[in-house]
Image (cartoon, rainbow, N blue to C red; front, side, top):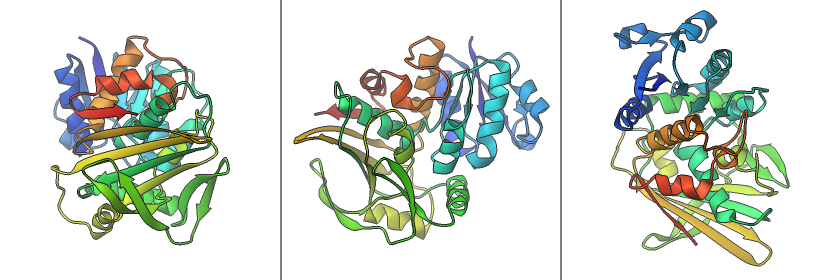
Length: 315
């Protein structure tokens, strides 16, 4: 049985990843920083490279679910490189993603392989189809609610602190940090949602993952206002949240669209991450080293494989 190390296995997303690995016939090896939460597992500290090396001994791949990824991503990636095994994480931290893409690593490394970051990249890449370039890409999120876990909130705070509270956008071919207010506008989602008020230029990992490999000078993310207000209000986690991700790619006077629908943004991150590992281990990749989801996988085929967790429509 092929073994896959899950770093942060006892966290909210980590538990979903462990269950998905078992469902697909992998042997999950549980790891993380808190030994008390890992009876029979392999505790390891990001401050102790030797402990990470011991945790990775004999595994075929590692999935990092432990945030803040600003602290965990690079040490776990370096350990994976020493072990010669591929690395996948579920980081939605823009700065941590940038740290990862800046690495010079020969082994396969795929960051942001989750609902935020990886899914939008796959949808945009599939929507592009045979286009080699586009004028603009828009990624709009509609969530019925957004009650993040404590870990997500902590990671988000680290990310905001690293950019001094400024928001991030990708425009005119560059990442920009801005301190002005988010624009508010209306986005017309597919039926039955229809027009919804959204915050534009909402700081999301898509502004890093998509222009990583697609020739496009502008990538804009949007979030429904109600979901954003839920995020800042806090409150108890609601796993019943439903989502629609609407991606529009424009080139000249033409437009292409990809729409994803599902439930529970944490639960669906598990099949995204595990599908990535399965494809890497079976050689179904189109790039080497550090790469984003749309860069390394056949995007349309990958999206089809996510059913029934996520339903996708390409227009």
